[in-house]
Length: 255
Image (cartoon, rainbow, N blue to C red; front, side, top):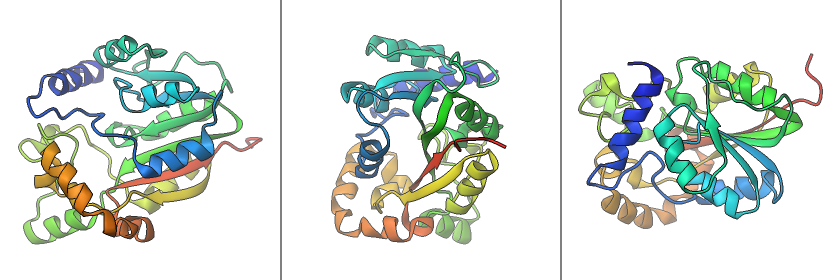
């Protein structure tokens, strides 16, 4: 099975799950709102690299007056995005968009790099598409989260966390194949030619625990009860943030 077929199957399963989970599940988080407000102004052109069905970020950015341009490898996901009225296109097998060099003001790459065999190629394509001085906002799951460390220490089991379909039952076919914490993400981004400027951890939540995360209603309750502790994820992201964000800038001139 090639990557296109794999992710078509991924989105097809998500669309028909009885528990209502999808890869783009959830609302825009407080951290994402902060990053969007600072880095993606109304009228800016924005590449969404690995946009999926666009239901979470694409729709929100378009409604915010952003010139949205999403790309994904899955035709099924793109059909769902087009049904929302989003401007989307197909990523080639090599992860290349149809955008011209230095043609977009900003880019987002949320929850994508952990899926890629060669994430550095995705960052190279984003760098090519950005105008000099343009910024990319990146998020990945934090593989060093406290619950993952504890589970591995006590049981030896490593949960990749990519999907309720596979993460615990069949981790060998889970969509997450690359793993990051704040330090490794920064190194990857800087090695790709960007200047990393801001790191941010998602607020702490007990909803990130595996047996809670797989159940949307229970996760919503856990998120609400965790609000007084959200500061832990921002102050100690390596330990307590389920997701980590980084803002990186394309240099005005590349050597």
